[in-house]
Length: 300
View 1 (cartoon, rainbow, N blue to C red):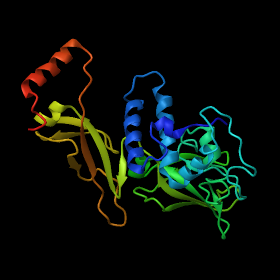
View 2: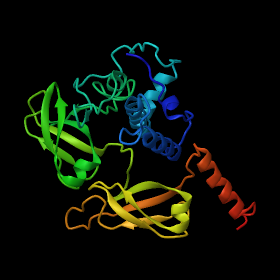
View 3: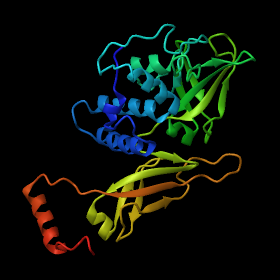
View 4: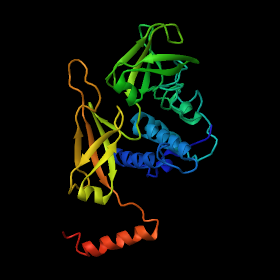
């Protein structure tokens, strides 16, 4: 397998904190999202960004990756596994489970490092499946937010078999889905839920946070724009004189509540962006704005 520099893919330094990783991921995922980007190779870049963020956002995965990276590998180098494999421990030879084909479209490098024998070099802190005293096997299960929102089956690959796993509506991270007799050993398979990284949404409890790019004139004059939600696009009214960072609430558009709890909301955070001027007419429009606002606009 070939080494991948996840920090380079996200354009951050190895010491980047959680907030910096999130910002870089959000920016690049939006740039290369297949629904938006027309750039050649955008889909592959989008997958690479998704994989890099999935590896670095989890402390255990990041620790395992950093240990490997410290050996001096460069992108494209052939990686030599340590004796005993990456996990350095025994146990079940079983991948961490991702919805949709079992690996979320991740590379062999990602699967080999974080899958079959878990994350870490000899730490025993595996991210893959692990046996329990009752004979059941427990594995982490990265579930798309859309499946959590709707409560629907997703297809996963388990030990070479495809299974349709029914995701309960509104299931929370840390809760488990039991599949009787579906472990490779014949015992029960417990899928411990975690939310898969999403290019458009972040999760805050039951609330969903979406950063919405708006043009300066939309923020200044107000506008009605289409906003993506887990349940489909809706129209949102942006009040006039809105500033960057302002948060607007779409009630009931977050993750479903469970056990009698109310549904979450979607929080839309405004990000004011200046579109690139690609034509002379667009540059003239910016010149007109400069004349209208003058040089003292910052003071105002």
